[in-house]
Amino acid sequence: MAPPNPNLRRRLASHGFESNDDYEFALRLLFEAQPGGVRCLNIVGDSGRRKTAFAQALAAALDYPHVFYHDFSRQEAPVAAVIVDPESGATQTMDAPASAFDRVITEACAYSEGARVVLILDQIQASDFQEQIHLYQFAQSREWVGSVGTVIANAATLLLVLISEDPLYHSLQKISFKIWADAAGSALDFDPKDFGLGAEARGLFAALGDLFRQIGQAPTLSELQRILNDLLGRIRSVEQLRTSLYGWIENLDRDRLYAPQVKPLLEQVIGELDRLVGVEEIEVAAPATTFASASPWTTGSDPL
Image (cartoon, rainbow, N blue to C red; front, side, top):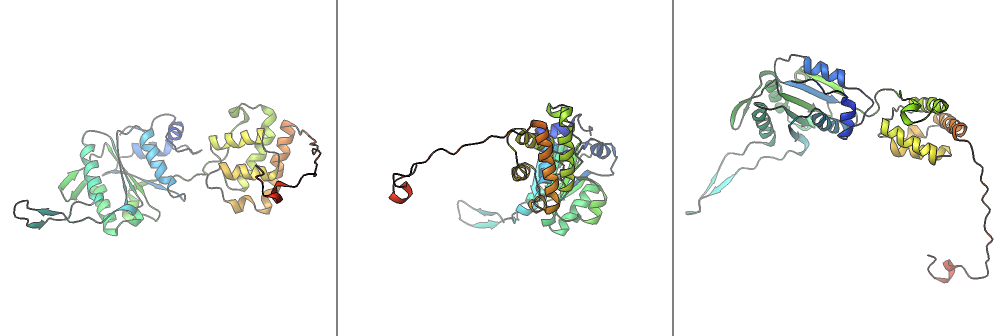
């Protein structure tokens, strides 16, 4: 199986998954290992469906021609098929058709014979425990014994991606390589020049770094770009800064943002912003108002 493409972080972002983490080395370890059966990637993290977004973006970023997906939380119980004889009207109940789980593995194995395939199994915590045991046996042996018979996975072309909100079955976990896919990963390491700013903005970036460490966040490139656009064009107060941060940063805890110990760091950012762009004092004079006529709010007329 081919290793990850160069500039993986940029490719993931182009497919909707943005992160400061660089997954190049982790995926190199996964793809260069020689598993005894099917290669398994376990995507973990606390951010719920972000793990699903990572799996889908990864499949696209690595140019897999075939992507199969199954969500155990949406699985429907198989319904027995009833066949009606058109002449006699007699009915015959056939065996229940293959489950969605059975079908998706069978199809993935079939396609893996001649092409690269990703099979994403999501919300595994909602599956029956016997299904996890069956999945482990499949990953080990590459053989899937389903309703249509036995199919064999091509270990060189099939990647099995496992996502669960609870820990996987122990044996299944032992044969899987884990990748953490939460939002705030690596620390903020951006430079003002990354955003077209000069050395005079270093004070602002240092203050932002202190603030982000305090609130436990590491904004991505696009998140920080939006925040900087707000800072340089619109923000002039602590409350406005809070609004921008909460609006743009994924999974930012609002209570943490409004904690008393965070306010001095917010004020520090505003102070550095004032030094960078200058403070422009504008006095707005209130226009003269004549109260000769009755207010439209009291006469019932439309104020608009």
